[in-house]
Length: 241
Image 1: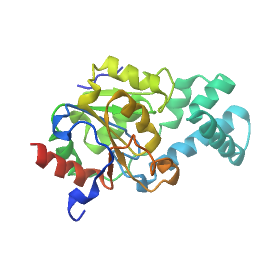
Image 2 (image 1 turned 60 degrees about the horizontal axis):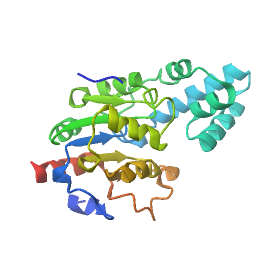
Image 3 (image 1 turned 120 degrees about the horizontal axis):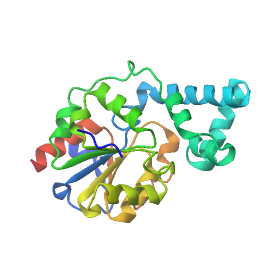
């Protein structure tokens, strides 16, 4: 039960100062959006559209102005929600309930992903800037819910999003994670920096979103780079079984 609060696959992974050997890991921490499902399905377009609708209704502006404000909040504060809370004292739960009311039918199912996750030794957690409800809906749609023992969301982070280090520290405390026996897997490169600073091994899932790759080329906090999640997990699981 969830706790609420390469042709040759070896060629897919590059290590840049990796920490623990992956066979020694007993806690696997996954980002949710654009990590457990591909960014190419454009689910986040729906979420951004819902954010635009919320901002337009809240401030009486048109959707184009709402989009401009959403982007500005994101750039300045890390998430749109953080900007709305800091600048306008928006009640966060109302915002989250609105933006995560989305259609998941366009998110493709990957029948190989569940077994690949299940084959990893130890616990699997989700660490997301979204909500528990959103994570549960996505995990349920993907058929992955049974493989995860915990979700750590933006509410558990006191609405302070990744990559602020405070959330990572609270995740470690709440789930009694031993950092040097933990892996964090993320599509946004900068979100891996605090995990590495704690002693976790980091895996960057290189996707198609340009801003998610910012800083990755020169980052010493990225220990492994992966092109596709499922094939990498399958290869890894076979090696450490």
